[in-house]
Image 1 (cartoon, one colour):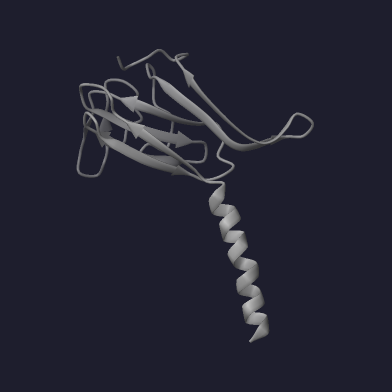
Image 2: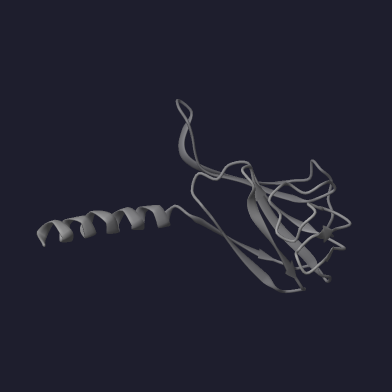
Length: 136
């Protein structure tokens, strides 16, 4: 019985540490029109969501996620299987698992990154217009 309790006590703090490093992004559509928000990272990870004006989409991202992007898509049409296209920011699906095509306004992020000798456990977030912009 004692060893069972010990395993539980050792496992529980591990869960707390793991969960405490995840990040949550709230994506809010402040445009006067519908956008289809998306996020993707290397390794076929990501998703997408239609957002009408004022709606919020909460995205939870695992620690260690690198080279990830969140972006709006406009003028989208999808079939019942989530396949389709957008006028801007298109990835071919409602739930993106790859980056969208330009033009698109990007929020880029990398979480809990390490570079020996330079930085340890840092998060990086930026807004980029390098691929143009697609919202006003």
